[in-house]
Amino acid sequence: MLSKVDLSLVLLTLCSCAFAVRYEPTWESIDSRPIPAWYDEVKLGIFIHFGVFAVPSWNPNGSTAWMWYYWKALKEKIFIDFMTNNYGPEFTYADFASQLTMEFFNADEWANIFALSGAEYIALTSKHHEGFCNWPSKYSFNWNSMDVGPKRDVVGELANAIRNKTKLHFGLYHSLYEWFHPLYLQDKANGYTTQNFVNDKTMPELYEIVNKYKPEVIWSDGDWEASSDYWQSKEFIAWLYNDSPVKDTIVINDRWGNDSLCKHGGYITCSDRYQPGVLIKRKWENAMTIDSKAWGFRRDAPLTDFLTSKQLIDTFIETVSCGGNMLMNVGPTKEGTITPIFQERLLDIGAWKFVNNEGIRGSRPWIYQNDTLTPNVW
Image (cartoon, rainbow, N blue to C red; front, side):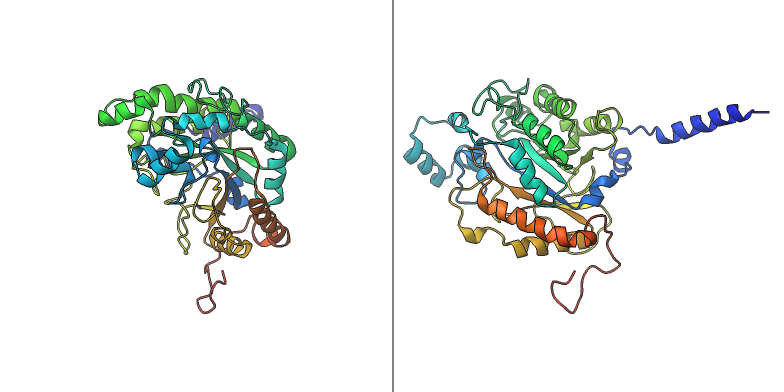
């Protein structure tokens, strides 16, 4: 017969086993993990697209972050002419990095602006498809923000400010692929039968930023050219969920390979500016932009391209009504500032959310999402 002490130990052991879930590197196992409750509670986040593309900050197609690709991969004449006429025929994209000065960057100011917006998490670009790392990565020699350009750890400074000055959750965007990295281009030429780029660049970077900065969101991107098997995504996510320093709070999206978008991972994004308009079964996110045409800062953007505060609030209400979170993007300048047009929109959202937050934070979708007779009532 067991004593009370023995019985207590048995029950404690059983409880420990019940909570010690180990996730396998399979989509079935990964998809079974519940999304940490904090993410569904908060509803609003801030996306920050920032990199070397903030220097030219120009693209007549709108997507400033893709300027290098249009210029050198697609070889569109308008980009070739722009670069030749303004920078000369010998100028390279890498030459822009020294002009990423960030002399006015103040991480505390950014953190304060984001907090006043009413948002409760952020996702800062750690590395976009251009490959430039906004932290002193050991795996990106002379193509990171400490070796060239601002000569500072942008990720680290903002992480510290967010955690010391606000209650926001700190997250990072990371691109799996890089347009012109030789190892990636070789893997691609080999039909992705080799994984040199993944082994030597992408995965070491991901482990590095998780261990060093402990983000609570990993917003993966650049997934569409190869499968999650090539990217080794499932192995990384299993480590993230089982053994990483953020295993209990980490939230991820669905962009981990061309077989995972809108199907596997954490919450689903399905496409940029995703807005299903109906309640769907999985937790989802509307990653969208205040500048309706671009993710990065645009020097030539007209006022009419910016969504009004009312449009942003309407989009946010519809998103929350259908069970989603909204990740609202701003594009800082090469000097490290958030321009007044972005600040105004963020503060307007914050003022509205201050009054209406009881109907937003922690809310759950109702059985109906909108009034079928009255437009725009969600």
